[in-house]
Image 1 (cartoon, rainbow, N blue to C red):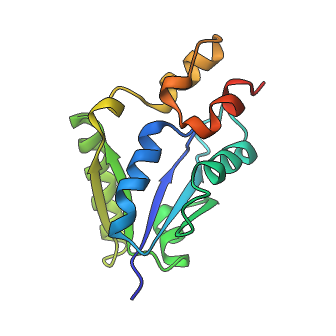
Image 2 (cartoon, helix red, strand yellow; image 1 turned 135 degrees about the vertical axis):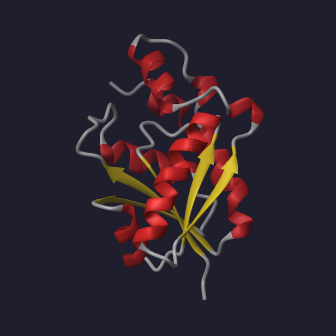
Length: 158
């Protein structure tokens, strides 16, 4: 059986932490599906089309990484894509508490689904998409926080 992991998130925008997590997780799986989930409770800063494009650029050298979007429950997306793993990154203890609860509910809904946690790299711990959006909104330099291959594209997006 193929080991397929789904890495769900908004990726609004992708950060170096997201990139690092996928690259470090790749040896553990046969395929990773980076899945941009539509959250009705959150309004995106960057358009979905751009986020999909930026992810494709960042991971163009990794054929075992697929980029998709979805709406609905992550467990249903996993089932549809024959994925038995959800990949999540942990930066802080608060992340762990939140992700533990979500992972337990997902496990309750699909007994075959395992959530795999990877710790963020030390240098990526303070970075999240919210911080990057705030810096971008006010014209600051987001370069240190996002993958090099998309810095100019994201920085110059209007």
